[in-house]
Length: 327
Ligand SMILES: NC(=O)c1ccc[n+]([C@@H]2O[C@H](COP(=O)([O-])OP(=O)(O)OC[C@H]3O[C@@H](n4cnc5c(N)ncnc54)[C@H](OP(=O)(O)O)[C@@H]3O)[C@@H](O)[C@H]2O)c1
Image (tube, rainbow, N blue to C red):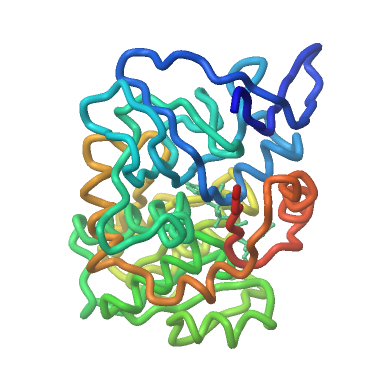
């Protein structure tokens, strides 16, 4: 076999183009590993990139795909040997270096991890970037002294990847978890994965401080909903700002911060330190292991379906996580 197929985005003449290209195998560089990809997943950011809604790739040409799992085919790294099962999420994949929407990938060893013993190539991608982001969000809340006894945690964008896995992990580790979704059809699903109750927000109060409803939150939506959460959180609660599915703007007041001691915490799965990733993945295979991965991963597609599926995802027509099976 001399060549392999990859999905490639290019911005030649500043216009978004996407197509399948044939790539020729080459010599490995120092500390580089060649991986045969088995699974990847379609995240919201991937869908933006593939559909051309946002320019996610830095540079003129790139293979998209924030994550992948697969088997080492060849290695010039002392850390990885032929035949080992590996994974990678974030770390610039599909943004600054070629990503996982490909049959094979050349990857620097500093972003690669062995698949933890209690996970498989499939389950590690069912967790993927979304689950990694959920785990670092929960970790940050706990480090900031969020306790089960202080009350319920609310999760927005609940039916999405980060939202669903956050609900499942929080509920498994003992938190009362409230889901916020726009769609009442998702209520049974959200209860099955661990939500104790579900809220469908209608008119949001626009006061400086609201009644104290939640002890903390994981927010995937941003904008007016995030403003409402900040003003509806109990004293010293933690709000993790993960996403901006609705808006990247935040028009709020400092009252909740200075009168209730509310903490707004940020997370970045892309820029999470490489030397701490193993620790989080070990937790995702033990204490944080999601128990409802097959319910959460509703869709499994092949590489050829990625372009159409991305268009569906950016227009809000895909629920739950989507796995890409490469072979
Ligand atoms: N900080 C990080 O490192 C990081 C990592 C991964 C993802 N993200 C970001 O986090 C967000 C969630 O990612 P994801 O992969 O879970 O995406 P996803 O699977 O597409 O889920 C997003 C969810 O947000 C809700 N939503 C979508 N459009 C909305 C709108 N216009 N207004 C209100 N709610 C809306 C929907 O849930 P309901 O239908 O249930 O309301 C949707 O399922 C995205 O913005 C993504 O870019 C950030």
